[in-house]
Amino acid sequence: MEDFHAKIGDSFKIYPSLLQATALLDKTTDTYLNVGQVVSGVVYFEQKDSWGACFPLKRSGKTRVKIAVKDAFGRKHTKSFWIPVVTLSEAKKYNPSFGETFPSLRKNASHTQTGVSTASEQSKT
Image 1 (cartoon, one colour):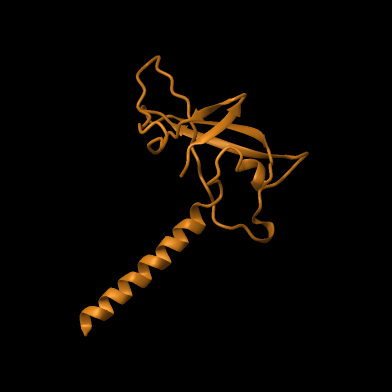
Image 2 (cartoon, rainbow, N blue to C red):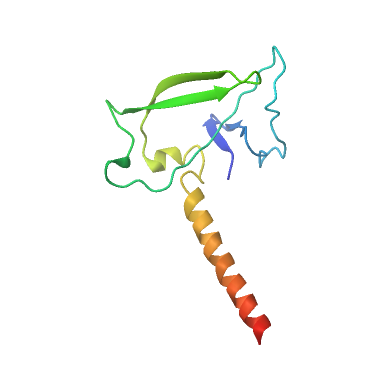
């Protein structure tokens, strides 16, 4: 997955991932925070294809998301936000890989399965 970024003038602002190494900076974000420490970054989740009524509810060009965090003491903190609904091409301005995780995994899985069956068939001969 490429890093999320935004063009600001002639430069780019990189938003580091909180769950994986940042490709451009070749470093990971420490997500264990001591008292008084702060970290900023992106957490990216992608759902499989939606069909029929499984799309998020859209009101006035926005949809509601709920963020839940469990802290080191086992306490759960939740907050809901209304965020703008954008087209896939608009989202790809911030990350060209946006929305391609599952198709990529499906493609790699089919290549792996094909390669495994071919290798096992060859070992039988």
